[in-house]
Image (spheres, rainbow, N blue to C red):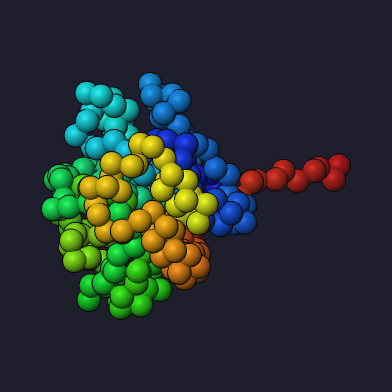
Length: 249
């Protein structure tokens, strides 16, 4: 059993598939919800892993969202402590930023299901080895990042060549949303705040078309998610409670 610290930015971007996997592994989850508590000052003390989820803000909006600087600081501390770190979408961008890489506007929005292709370096990666050469997975982002120095590029798409990276042997940034479930996607598709993204992307002729494609790909995505995130959970060191022996006097 270990304790996992999770940074959440909005209620509609949860752990998804990761939640039951972590609980089944008997790990304890502690959320820091920056939407509710933007001035939170989380500490890594007592935690064995860090997960940073997605959100609608950008890493360069620190004036508007000061907690982003707090997160970058904690991520750097986690890197120094050599604990497993997983970043998803905004989380991946924050890890890239913490490692000194640039994060910037992509050539276009990726909203919906897109083909991701493995790099040569991904063949023997602990997490990405579970991918086929090409996988169709869910995306929702308009920003991208450079691969940090000394990190390895693992996946690419036609629009964004940097979709995933590994730094060291236990720090991962995933631009795409492998954690999503069908209810989570359907919620995103019907959020008023997302309407402009859907319109600007223009990938689907109708909302129903995206719902139909989600039904087509969600189960294979979730199977892959369970395998990939299972490998990440295996990187988390277990913590065993010490029990004192009673005296036989």
